[in-house]
Amino acid sequence: MSKKFGQNFLVNRRQRERIIEEVKAGPGDAVWEIGPGIGSMTALALDAGLDLTAFEIDHGFARILARVFADRSNFRLVEGDFLATWKTVLAERGAPDRIFGNLPYSVANAIIAVILEEGQIPGRMVFTVQKEAAQRMCARPGTKDYSAFSILCTSVCKIRLAFDLGASSFWPAPNVTSTVVTFTPRPDPVMAQDRKGFSAFVRAGFASRRKTMRNNLRSLGGMGGVSPADADSLLTSLLEKIGKPADVRAEALVPEELAIIYEGLKA
Image 1 (cartoon, rainbow, N blue to C red):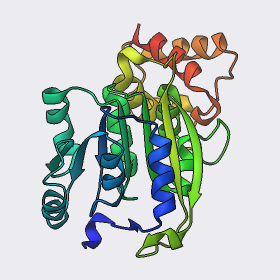
Image 2 (cartoon, rainbow, N blue to C red):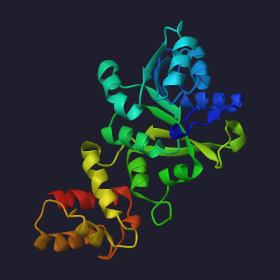
Image 3 (cartoon, helix red, strand yellow):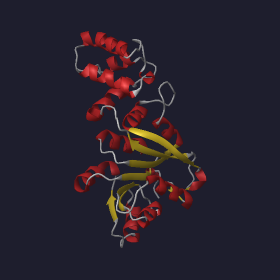
Image 4 (cartoon, rainbow, N blue to C red):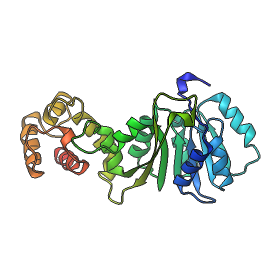
């Protein structure tokens, strides 16, 4: 095991079975598993007949996986960092029907963000993450957990906190509670045609929680494709359009309202 990869293995078999059930995939479905470790959930997925592609960054575990599942025709192993390899797999084999994984806490947000921002959203994603991170994913406006990442997640998907996993379900036992989170695509995603640009705009609006959205956008040059002289008045009119005061903070706005502002400033 390597500390730098933040590895905690889910040793509770019943909880592994619950996660596979939550994936809701059937025989022949193309499924990606991120961070299979030594293959405890991988085995369950393969036994269920899933067409599984596993992404493993740890060379030692990749060797174990390659040996243990060598005779499984429905198993493919991709060794290396998911963030560096997934686009190649996508180009070669197409988008999966499902994605699941017990994600390292340190990179969970980065992995989820890149999938959502790139727009290749499968019919269902199931991830095990730190409970606090899960709560931020589905946080509502005006709450302390609401963030640019909350907006990215909820503008693209419906988020459900399926169930918690206590520390005793893992080895070594982490110092936190984990949560299994389910993502399903929204039928009406926000800014589906310009998700990356919208995400960058929202991050600018949240750059400092104490500042108004106007001041955050000013300081980061995020006022859109208009001259500085016209930017303030345009932003004011856009805020009036959605019934918000000029000194509103980004944390008070829902994704749809932020999209109206973004499109107005881009025009």
